[in-house]
Image (cartoon, rainbow, N blue to C red; front, top):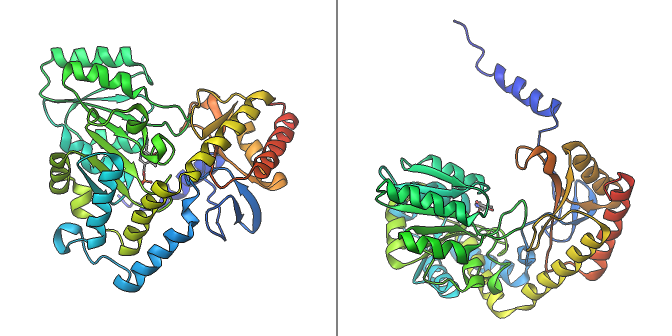
Length: 395
Ligand SMILES: *Cc1c(COP(=O)(O)O)cnc(C)c1O
């Protein structure tokens, strides 16, 4: 049989475009900050994970520059083969202290943490129990395990308890419960205190992926600090690319956990270490969070103001209780249209989120607050959102 090796590409891409399911990737011509130039147009960005505004913080940029001058660009190899930098050790000690845990590891990305760590923690004869709305990288990590899988309805602790009983009755060797800290599509938080309570009854290990919670909760330390659960959550996965404004993934927990991960996680063992400039910038980002609390305060002042006004206008913001605020619209068409008009006519950049990322009838524009937005910016955004919301009969 003669095959056309690439024929499917054109067809699949056409299908995506025909069904309006393709991503439009825009291009920034400035740093990622509230007033940015995107595709040649000055817009107000309401769609980044750079919650504390640190992506362009001068001290962090300077730390990267200094490390670049001293160490050059690349790391040369994976950490286990040619080592990491003294900067990496300094970062890991600093980050562990900041998080209130024994040890931490700088991993490639938050995505890589889930791919690398989850399949090592559980295997044949074990159970892994996951929130239904967990991030795709958790779902992929779970798919790599040989453990039996259970899923509980979103944030439903009584369903989690039922799953724990099933695993227990089946004689599971180990049980791993895994949840996002803050859910990125809805901006709601996992009930981690209640999860910790039920897991303790079964001796289940708890893994929280706090990629969005770090920076925005617990004075920047994340959801575990927010609930005061230090010592009761076994694995904290995180990202330095969101609230901390730089780049990388993290694992935080006991010394044993970190030794285990260093030796077992395939994404850690097989992917190159970070450039030293990135490591230095990450370290400075933590220092900035520790020493400049106004970013955190501004983030929450902005969140409370903006969400209050959106609710007053009659938008459906779902169960959001964090700086991630969805404007739930319904069908994908109007959500995309609203985002498009906001960008082109009002200079407001918010991202439409449609199926398959959320259910078809829960299409939305996701708005994310940022510490660097001023009250003037927020009022500008609210006026534009109100105008377009009324024009499209959404409010
Ligand atoms: C963003 C995100 C990741 C991926 O983190 P990166 O550092 O960007 O790879 C993983 N899990 C969750 C819950 C996330 O929101």
